[in-house]
Image (cartoon, rainbow, N blue to C red; front, side, top):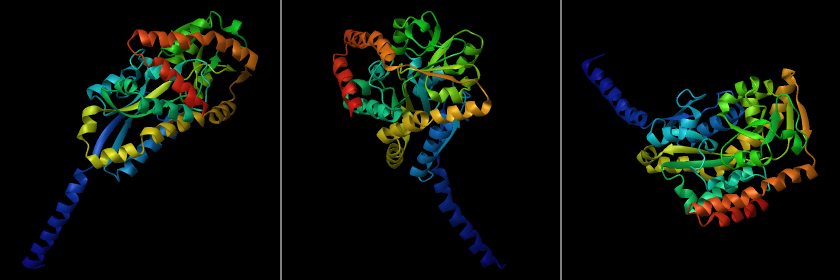
Length: 343
């Protein structure tokens, strides 16, 4: 190759590098912290698909690395980790933080007219859109989505619960807020334990059972340490996907819009449906294949009503407490929740 050809080749390589370099530099890498193991139902059916949606919506400009099973941050610490920039994005379970987002806890009141998680997630997001007081609860982070579980059922290890009297005195793992209050009025002893610790707590008899959706029964392999499944609608819980505020504000406007396009209302519904609503059949199939006992009892309507009547005063108490803390819109928020759940 003569000197002129060599110079032309070098010029072409330089031009390619100039074109490719900026494109490569545009890839924005972010971390996402979650407490669930990678193989859990919710991670496989909600987290991974959503991360892919983000990468597709941003046309590859964003790459998210997921840190599963508390490898980056412990579950109860994720909110502060997002707030302080330890992680860019966090899967946040609000049952860990009683009174941190108290108005959002309306969706956790026991004996609501429960709907599938997809619908309840829609309701919670719309409450957030409607009430500035709820928006203020998330002011320290950039909120991407809110979603809920379907109503919890009761799972127990050694004793089957069929009626109200059966649960009295039993140590039941619950989450903070109204679900704890419900367990008290039902006569059980509520125990607060982080989800990753529940397997051992059930196995060692630290608790007799727990209120649970179907997802952790599969994802945390709780079917290995429980035998009885009492189908009675207890309460629901809620979650958020939040981003560090400074990280969000540093993103280009087009990237913000692309992330928002697969978050917000539609993202909340997607997570509610795929994290929770689709899981029951998978649990039953897995338990059957594993040869584990699964004794299911569906509580009849008249007995469900007994449980519900004990729980309903918690609604009034919740409104009273919220008003006492300076939230005059609490009754309106409850009324709106009930109205939306009817639609």
